[in-house]
Image (cartoon, rainbow, N blue to C red):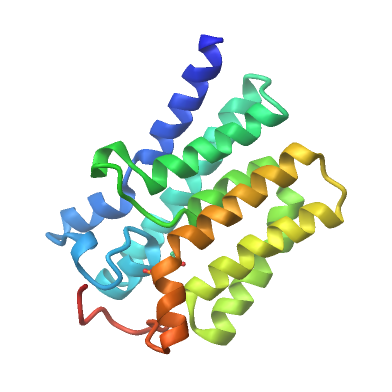
Length: 200
Ligand code: G3P
């Protein structure tokens, strides 16, 4: 019914708020034209530094979280709640404010997971961060994190709709990181701490 579509549309619009692109624009930078070209906190970090990156990371997590939290307050649960999480992440990745381009959906996925299943979020977070820390590749940590969430959800015996939601979220993370995967294979992926010098 129409309320379902309205809820999904609102979640999409929350996710679509392009914090990274707008913060960078405030600094006079087109973030989609520097570094990796991504709108996420990782590219903001290598382009504008830690302060703006923290702001973008917090906002991108928050917008995913608020979408699922609001849905819960309206007593939405089960598959539709999974749909809300997906809609928020799709909004971030394919934002109406950026001609249907956007980010890679890692922070926003994590935000939705925080309110979808806090325990899974809590168990997944250290694995992703540790991978980033050890490899110095944020992309690798993101993909390992996505996979970990699926494994943890299955291991905890969560309902099928939740497993499928996390499977799609992880699939989206791999899809949006396809250029990163090529760079990792080619050995020229940017390391955490590298400054943005070249654009592509
Ligand atoms: O969240 C995105 C991160 O995993 C990779 O970002 O800019 O290195 O492509 P980037």
